[in-house]
Length: 616
Ligand SMILES: Cc1ncc(C[n+]2csc(CCOP(=O)(O)OP(=O)(O)O)c2C)c(N)n1
Image (cartoon, rainbow, N blue to C red; front, side):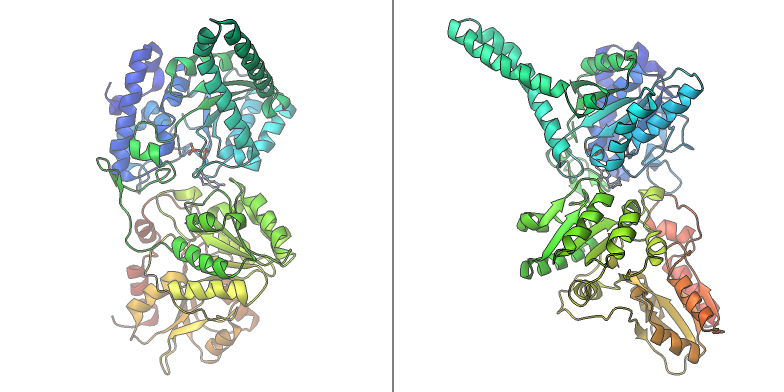
């Protein structure tokens, strides 16, 4: 069957094992073809092809609910539920999402993008099902990486409390984005080892039991194996009163179908442990699954990924902290599972004793960072803006309240593009702005980013948040200099001019490039909190007309900080505030999204001219 002709998963029920295997190969080819154009989470999806096919063979979606954790690995589910013909639009403006979406299909019962929610969601669906006396299965598909998140553990713990049956499929590929970490990951590794022992021991028995000595050797190893097995059957899951089934070879359709049927027939909640290979079937992704976790477009023949020739802002930040760590052994770097995304590879390689990957644990990592810093240490804690939402309480209750010296790197601040709604970093200013003791800043270029980091680490000793966008820019390695907290800078000051533009980050550099030599003052508000009251007083005194440009939610933004101050001073200045209204933003390329929001630089410049009555 042509992949794009699939309209519903029903056809699978009549397929033989051979046909199912052929379908899996065709799906892999389809994924590689399409993702080489659109980009997406290739390695995660290649690893879960057989598992998703087997799930749709055994269960009946949409009656049975399939909830994919994060949802980045739900592409095969999308294909089997009739969305293959839309794959050329995957993650593109107006196209299908890279995650499950309720308004996209009745086969998507729940939505995510952030990890570790699937078991909680499955429990909620199962509980409601039981209240209604319905009979359907609810299945959470969660990776071993996402299982490191505390929310997943809270849900596992509540399976006993709610008593509603759920099926948890643990897709264990030993990887989060990087190699998975932690005690649970070690336990899963032991189970994997026992599985390979199990497979090997069949031929081993045949060979050894031929002689007396061989039989003795076999008995000894058999006892060790049995002990191991007992340990596995008495594990964290069974102790939480969840049946454990596995491990199952995740690339063997027959084995998978057998296990999933058992899970379906089980009366109790059950976890099926499935072993898969991330990137399976595409050599570049199999051999470097981290790099191929989520990719842009690529050359499918050579496996070459298309990349910017300029360094990313994450790289510039990470390289700067690396320079500090070389001189200063009081600095510790902590990441919640984002070594690759936050470009921390070199720090982790060269300072293994002062760098910690905590798994997908934004909230834990933040409290950990706080406590470490209270012991004469400085902690660098880079977290993507949207994932930082998970750590709000820890930032407020721990770091800010105890005034801990943690430098939070707010990576992917602003619009992030193709990952869409769940990933845009447009809320962090709003939720950090209200926290006492908090400093929030953003640099306009690599020099300013370096100097802000220098200020955060060495010229103050309190919480310090530095935001940086998903972008690549020129990198100039410059001497460090303090940028006093709460100070702004004029990029252009025109004598007698009454028009002022205020912005920050690389946006202010872009505006400066377009507006230089015009009758407009341009202020770089590099500190969003605290604001520069000296400059603001001057703007009031000289009766400036003000245009504030931000690409974040307007609520509780730099703009509202300025308005509040002006209100307090009973100032009469005319002010225009731009930014994003209080709504969720879809997926698409960053520049396309900015256009849709009337926030692209070209339109903004036109708007500025109009506002100030200036001819272009
Ligand atoms: C709260 C949160 N933090 C970080 C991420 C980024 N992230 C997306 S997928 C992923 C790894 C997930 O690993 P796993 O669940 O094992 O899935 P795999 O891709 O290996 O199949 C991470 C860290 C996220 N989506 N949500």
